[in-house]
Image 1 (tube, rainbow, N blue to C red):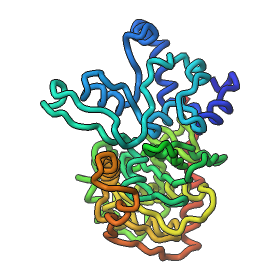
Image 2 (cartoon, rainbow, N blue to C red):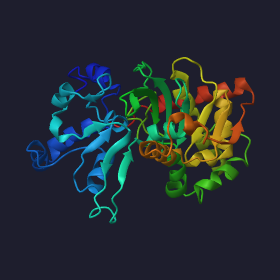
Image 3 (cartoon, one colour):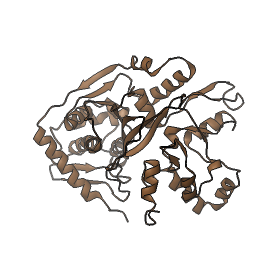
Image 4 (spheres, rainbow, N blue to C red):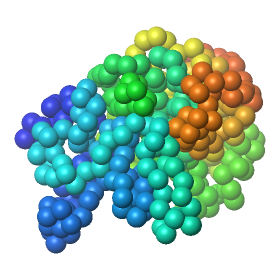
Length: 382
């Protein structure tokens, strides 16, 4: 599709890139490799959708086939400006538009569960948000420029860009953040890093040099630095801002003096470096602080390294599972538990603030060495 010159138009409409990461390309693969299944989609027997649309369909015994803008905007089939499915994109990817779910607001009266399918309960489905968008909502990032980073299997940096689509020439994705019941669309820029927490899991399960993810802070703290060991965890390719699905992981700078502590510390540094790469490409206004969440945000050393790399404070809330919190927030708005997003701001509470420090010249030099290693990781798989 790229060779046929389609990517520029796809990016213009969707804010995304042509990449195996997104749903549209997966559906093309399905059509080519599972023709019997795809024939049932084309005949109207099967529907296609996102994980949330599947869950709602199951909970409602198929009565509702719906999704919200945050999930729809990650399919390569959604027109960001129009706020709905694109006939042009559906044609390009060969996906019948009537097989797709209806796009509804992110909260409000969305659907009702069927007791026969959902634990005997008749309950409203009052909120739908995609994973990272929900974390942005849970961090109460309601103003333009508010940013958060979720450290999970991967790391995802989102910045609220308000009611207009903001484009990036630096590998960031334009996306729909959420849609209110009155039809107001809020957009965001996202930097998706595929492997961060998964790199720690690899240390545990693959290399078996740590017993648990929680140990990494103490192990890494036994050395003052990684001693120029650099780990690029491109275990499934590179996401933003480099976007190279053929990149592969590498560990450089190993000497006879390298220990597991250096490799563990290099892993934490890699997470912070990768987040800095994304933040460095974000448009103005300049970042003044970064709200963090997700499992790895409990690692104090990682948060401090992150603050040092960014040169701005890193703020960790008391509730770090903000994806779940954001889902609760939209459900609460949809059912009247809270009257407005302003009420939600009052629920956010700071756990700890990490102020930047260290030798700026040395910090920047370490990041430059990381960028050199990233360049060497590219194009390895063919």
